[in-house]
Amino acid sequence: MAGSTWGTMLTMTTWGESHGRGLGVTVDGCPAGLLLCEEDIQRYLDRRKPGQSRFTTARQEGDQVEILSGVFEGRTTGTPISMIVRNTDQRSHDYSAIMDVYRPGHADYPFDEKYGFRDYRGGGRSSGRETVGRVAAGAVAAKLLAELGVTVTAYTKSIGPVTVSGDKFDPEQASVNRLCMPDAEAAARAERYLDGLMAGGDSAGGIVECIMRGIPAGVGEPVFEKLDARLTHAVMSIGAVKGVEIGDGFAAAGSTGSRNNDSFRNGRTTEAAECDAAGASDNDAVSDSCGSSEARKAVYKATNHSGGILGGISDGDVVILRAAFKPTPSIARAQQTVNRSGENVEITIKGRHDPVIVPRAVVVVEAMCAFTVADMMLLNMSARLDNVKRVYGR
Ligand SMILES: Cc1cc2nc3c(=O)[nH]c(=O)nc-3n(C[C@H](O)[C@H](O)[C@H](O)COP(=O)(O)O)c2cc1C
Image 1 (tube, rainbow, N blue to C red):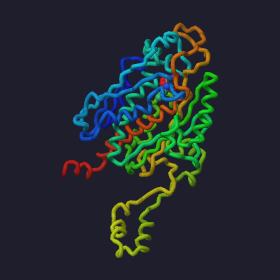
Image 2: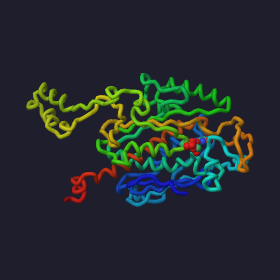
Image 3: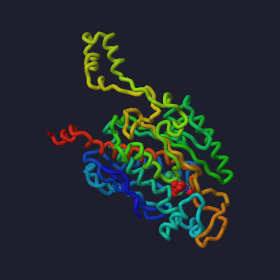
Image 4: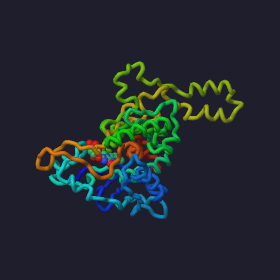
């Protein structure tokens, strides 16, 4: 099966099935010397783990990670970092009833058409469990990005019709409530909405928003490897994602040029005025900052409709991405479908499923964004001759 490797300078190759022995990932291209231990990875995996609330699948997996290679005495060695998570709570018999039947909204039919054979237990590689490897790889990337002053944070923006309110936005809430919503009131309303759907054997979709801070201007490769193109590719590859947008995204189509363009400003202008007011010569701190190249280069945008990317290259502003997740395809209601013989049949899906994918997918979006930004930042290092010469001391 092709298509399990992502990245250019920093790569991840994920492997494993939902009901196989385990899942894992090999991360290659991580610079040597990065402090890394299993707890760094486990913290991320615990956010993805099933069985943590009534809004996630009841499957109980410890999802304990083991680092098999690439780390010595607590630091990366520059060689492939291989990580494994063993499956412990498979109930493959739950799936025997659907081995010859195609679940609506799931990947069964196209997998069978493509390979003429499929691992029907939990969807094999098309299972949400495939994201274990992505999250482990994303945790490595996040550690690397922390060294570069970049943070990547995702949260639930909406579930069904319930959207987080800008006025009540509280980032702490996203790590406190079960739906990862940074708005306690919206989370309570979303819980009621989900309870109603679950009582009727139905499921919900929603939106994950991801905020990337600290990415300097200049990251992203024209023409096919634009930063927005890479980010959307990375996030669209997550199961159940049906749309990805950057900045104002689809709303920009209904805007006008005068509203949508972000004015450029130079902070130097403000600082120069401050220098004059403070009397730079009387104040060493102000004087230093007035003469610095940072002040000369203090270009910023008055607004951020672009979502931090122009021409496929980061513009120095916060990068904003949103991913739309469809409702979980496996629902408890009877549905119409066909079997492998092409007969019309009715299907009632057993097994344990997420009534909404979004809360568990938050960390997956974060991981894919972190990994992609880290990869693109490494790639950007050869863009200027003076940078290349600096590496070689020439
Ligand atoms: C974290 C995560 C958890 C998921 N959990 C389930 C689940 O419990 N039941 C289900 O039917 N699909 C689940 N999915 C979605 C399926 O993997 C996905 O819908 C399916 O592979 C079809 O692909 P598509 O929706 O991208 O077309 C999950 C996806 C993710 C990312």
